[in-house]
Image (cartoon, rainbow, N blue to C red; front, side, top):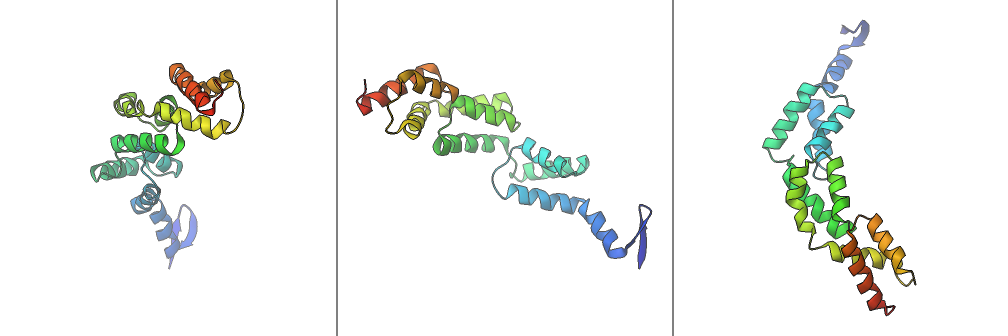
Length: 171
């Protein structure tokens, strides 16, 4: 069986596959695969589907469906992202907020959950110093500058460097 599609002759099977790859089933399959690796923000999902040239109508339908099902949840994503970045990467609040803004999370949501990072900032700064300056004799100014570039506040950086040097016996 021969069908005509966009002025070209294709077999019937190829026409069905071509239509399916542009349809909702294909978009949903791509979305499920994307969501299977880790939690995603709403904006990440929308950007991913746009990059894959999915129709805007399908994007809106799929995002609404998976938000109702709880697979796309910016609040849960924000909490999980903050916890992971503190525990695994020892990032500062500023660095975490910057990443979340890049992922499409609004400032109100970030401010609501970033307060959990306040308690862990000192420990994160110490972990960064231990990782970077283990066994090295470095000037305090360089260590403070290092932490400031990582996004830590000055008072936290100063306290962390002083405690780090005292533990090493350098003060």
